[in-house]
Length: 483
Image (cartoon, rainbow, N blue to C red):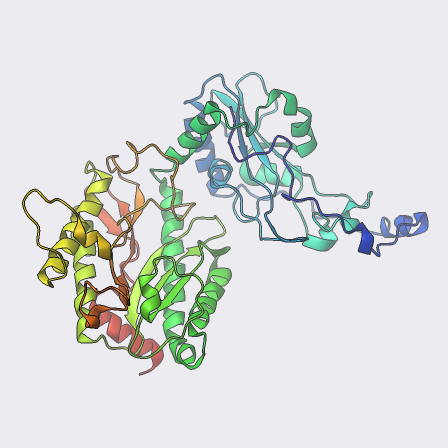
């Protein structure tokens, strides 16, 4: 059984690049002898086991118990090609990261194999399920006794920096390691990425395993939210510059992304810096518009930590520091919907109930404003969804839309359990060309999004310290802008 994201013979890069026609690397025997000699000893110290290792071992045990007697394969994946011979920064597959505890420092092309107990070598360092024995395969760092370390721009340490040894990763993650070549030698008995029903079942199980977060994961989620809060503060402090630039939204994007790189790995998803009517485009990521006083700025952004856990927060703020009457009306309706949804969160309710509760407020408000058609008792058309077409909540963790392969009966129709982390993010969006609403509403888009963790008797808002109330938001903007 295998994970569907893996090629049969894993590569570190998804495309092989031949730059031999422009290579200037010397290849004479005399040069090779010179460059391969005269080096001091490399750092062979073994690190202490990282905090995530114990939790990753428990997760391997949990998924192994679902597939007793079957070999399980999880791939980190390869570096994605951006253009020609350049690649995006590597980010391991979430299932691989969850089951190894390896984060932003994981190696492209690595593969985790869980062999049924008794079939793997006897020197397993532990940390795997009683039903399975774990081996982590990756490409060993190049020694100075071959030309790879200086001549290979894809993996050579002269090009990309120091890489860990097998022994160092084994100590770091508390798992047995082996060279990637050993995995490739086993390719005949590993069905990897064939698109079979077994592949689907394993991907689904790995996704469902993340529905309930452990203690380590919740700590990481709070840290990601806290870093995101710092980024939001810095964005507001930069609004003066943003209003002076033609592409002011890119000032917002750039300032937040800088915080993400300082405090974490990167952003958890492309930052949405939507000012004015752009706030009505749900996934506005072009961010090439102006930021003007008098408009609202919808900032939907999250920091992804080096552990790869990400926040997902949205705040909608008045650029000038003061909502107009209509902007405040829309904002407070969305806030009421968010608060109503959060108020019902507790173990045992259906996940979809959170969305339904928010929609009751959205329906009532838009009807009070006279925006909806008259309805008969037999007409159950949700006309209010014209102004909020997206869902209210999604699970959050290693992916911004975490656990996406989980079965519907465990996700949308599933019952909440302590440790689940998800968003609550209602909104209202009135397009500039929407003739069903009065002109004063057109071009206003508002979303308020918080990250919630379910507790034994309710929930905790991980992002509660980021201002939400209209008066608090106005004061927040004015303080950070120095107005």
